[in-house]
Length: 111
Length: 242
Image 1 (cartoon, rainbow over the protein chains, first blue to last red):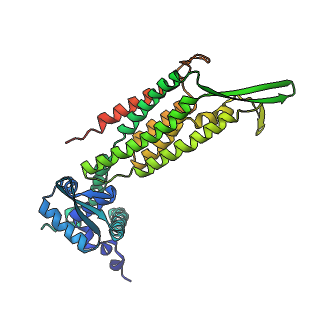
Image 2 (cartoon, rainbow over the protein chains, first blue to last red):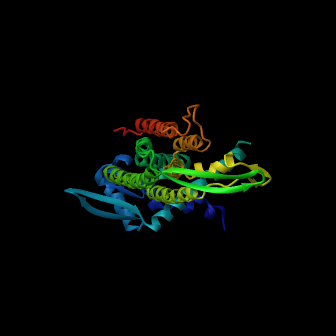
Image 3 (cartoon, rainbow over the protein chains, first blue to last red):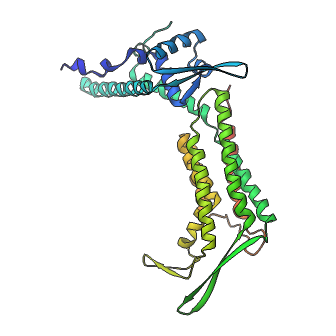
């Protein structure tokens, strides 16, 4: 096996690694269940943009989207699926390994 | 649709740091520490009113003992109004806290992790109430030897379990769970301070001796004031910024 094949960057999933989608997964994981409006405000996105990213995550089976009403107000709630929890855990682990590799390599280069 | 990869928008360090920032934002939105603290502060001070009104409505349990030098009797007295008040008040308080957090979660749009705190709080209230009632009906006997120590019924080691099974420590122990649930170091520090005041106990030199009908007052006022003060500080710092 080559060094490139085992490089942690190869383990990063493009669906999860995208900046906004990683943000959605992080917020949803921390909140357990999060409302569309809170995600939009926290991630500073337009409704359309957030909706498109949520569709990508839903199609990948990483989030569940639940639509309903509270009184007359339409509400959309997002929660992570077990696959979404695992994908986020793996992404964070890969990022930590990448940081570790960078930190290992930096002093060697400077010598 | 923007599809910028995280790797293109920052180093792994920056990406991880931004996820931590997002997690912190969510936690801040979820926290409502001030509510249980203020509520238990009020519940504690109201207990003073119940204790005073229930003065004279006491249950008395005595136990005789014989020692080398002679015989004696040890009695425990507890206020029956207070014994009824605390389990009811604590249970109702936890129901109110659960309602508060659920309502807040709906209005803010973020889920809540309050369930372990509410469950732990109610369990502690029930277990410690049963333990204190049992202890009230089984007064400590004469002096005992424990691990080579000669302990009188008034010794710290013998009275500590009584303080541990008090409603104040039930509140404090459950607050430890809340500090874990909310991942709040400041609440953990406040709770440890509160438990020290309850369990040592620290009375700041304010003691009203029995059989005064106000003997309960210093303990309740001090612990209630600590909760109210801490709750007010958290209320100021946890105000929504928008």
